[in-house]
Image (cartoon, rainbow, N blue to C red; front, side):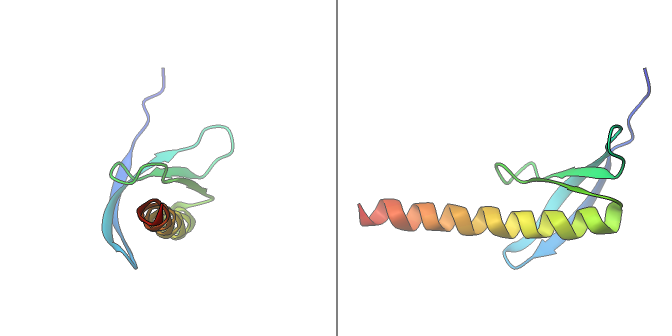
Length: 76
């Protein structure tokens, strides 16, 4: 069994800085990026730089969706 080397980095977004975990993607190549503290924040990039850019956009989208859901539920 091949050992997977995970990498971590802090990614800055409009909503703050987040710890991101990057794992090599065996089938497509590139990296899968996940954010443990942001539910549903998972993305992919063809290299680490691309994965960082994509996960930053994903975090922003997840935060906007969360804020929209909170705003909607408070109006009910």
